[in-house]
Image 1 (tube, helix red, strand yellow):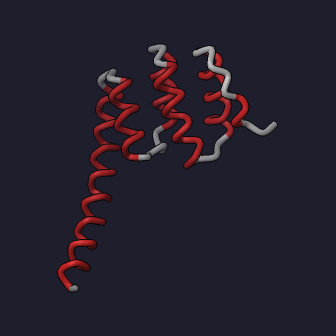
Image 2: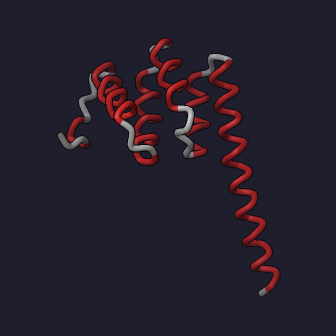
Length: 104
């Protein structure tokens, strides 16, 4: 029983470390212009903390579909009017009008 509990503690530490690694990887990929890969890393990490940089870079490089995926994840974690506005704009740029998810 003690081994199982220790294993669970180790598993939780590994999960937290993996989230941190994925977030750092996302930041590095974003700086190198690897927008799709960066967004994938941030989504896997479930980390919306760098949403301003992600939105700016994805918008500049026209990665609208990827940005929609990222902003949908970010919207669940960070209720921010900027995220909401950018998600609506990204939906419009992709001609996907997912406005049924918004309450006006």
